Length: 134
Image (cartoon, rainbow, N blue to C red):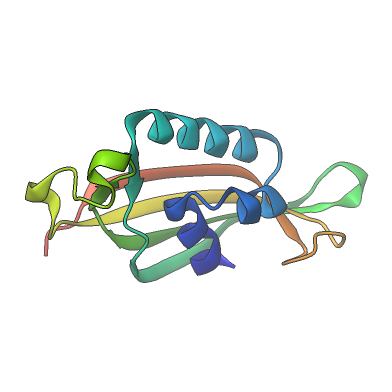
C-alpha cells in the first residue's frame, strides 16, 4: 500500500487517493493538490526507497475499530515539472534536477473491510521533506 499511495500522492492521482483516504487526510491532500494546481507544478513520481517502517501506536477506537499509526521514510527525486501548457513537463527549477529528498511520513490508518483496495483507510496523513545528504 505504501509505495502505491505515495506514488499517487506525488502524481496527484485523486481517484486512487479518494479510495484510500477519509477525513483530515482527504481534506489535507485535496487542499495540497489545489495549491499545486494553482502553482502549475507536479512532483516527480519516482520513489527511490521506502524504509524504517515503525508502528508508532495501535489501538481499538470507537465501535471496536482498530487504528494503527505508522511512520516511515520515503526517498524521492525532488524535481518539480510544469503543468502549464506553454512549458508542459519542463523542470521548474533546474538547480533541483539532481536533488534527492527524504520525506518523513506519519499515517494513521483505520480498519475498513469495505474498502475495495486495502481494507484500511488513511485518516491522518503528515509528511515533512528534508534534502538528503547524498
